[in-house]
Length: 150
Image (cartoon, rainbow, N blue to C red; front, side, top):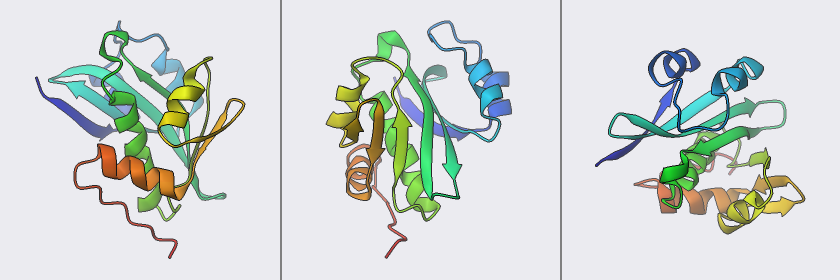
């Protein structure tokens, strides 16, 4: 079975992939909270198995992840890491130098983000450019990060 990752609009996500019973969060509500949010999804064949919601914060030049979720039966397969790597690539693509930030919502998630190279301060996590580059090289085929800060 083939795993694919793609960017989708909020409208496309709601029309084609939601509701999905294997997810804990109400993504329709999350999208209402962040109308400018961007989405990447993970599909196993045609089935939604992962989604990440983020915004580009142009005033401070970083991407902020609002939520990431992988279907419970699909965890431990690097899907979440791959979705975060997609956001890291987006940060480089928009001249944010790979800076990505998030706040964890569940206890224990900090360990996951730290393993990926994020710097954890309580529930806040920052991926600095080196960590973002490493994520891209590891999880995105071709690893084409472009550090536009130089």
